[in-house]
Image (cartoon, rainbow, N blue to C red; front, side, top):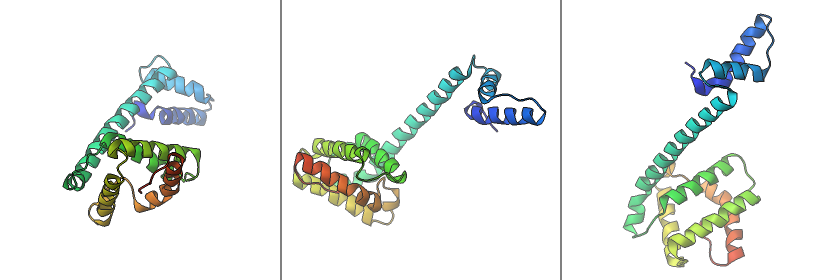
Length: 180
């Protein structure tokens, strides 16, 4: 069953049904009619409500994903005495997955920007200590090697290989080792 979040589909159905009966309406007209039928004053108002609802739902999903990531990786990091900044990392991980899954060019400015922010967060996390950075990387590699944990991790080996050149380039710009 459809609800207000399906307003565009509802408008399309209305337009198609009316066209089948010889009544021709434009897309904008059917969107306005649909908005009024759903209790909004106009399409822009309804569209803003739909976007606000979607943004709220996405925010809740992100909070859940951050908690899940934290709960999943915490045992690996705690055993090593490592601190994680899960929320910030979760946002970077999601952005990396989005770019990767969209087939983004690993040499693009967007990926390089992501790599720069990744390195900046890594520096905040490990204070530039190469031993600590190596421990973080080793903990993640260990998690990737665990067949029960790996499928639940936010980053796959393939994604990390894809991101690697951008991380190396970002690291060479500021100097210092990159750890993927």
